[in-house]
Length: 136
Ligand code: FES
Image (cartoon, rainbow, N blue to C red; front, side):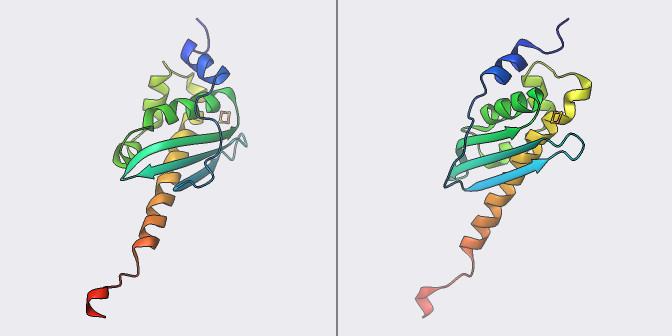
């Protein structure tokens, strides 16, 4: 049996949504201390829907395939759904990863969560302080 599924190889060779979003609403970056691989996610969010997502991954083939698949899974989805994305779901969508490569898919889950947290932080900052003009 091949070590990697066709889907892993496809997303590794032709990764979807590679790049940078300059005016991203949320950016998340994570690294794995053991292997030194780094993943960065950029999100564009409109009305709590992820309208665009791009990634940069400096890492192994499984990390590239995981980030590519993860972007496909959350594009067009509400923030709440993206927040609930697990590395297992990413690995399943890739038709599996070898056990010792599962940690690579964790990077994708964490990078997306970090980017969403960044978005929430920015949104919160924009919303406050609350000024009520009516009583001015
Ligand atoms: Fe580092 Fe895959 S070996 S993310």
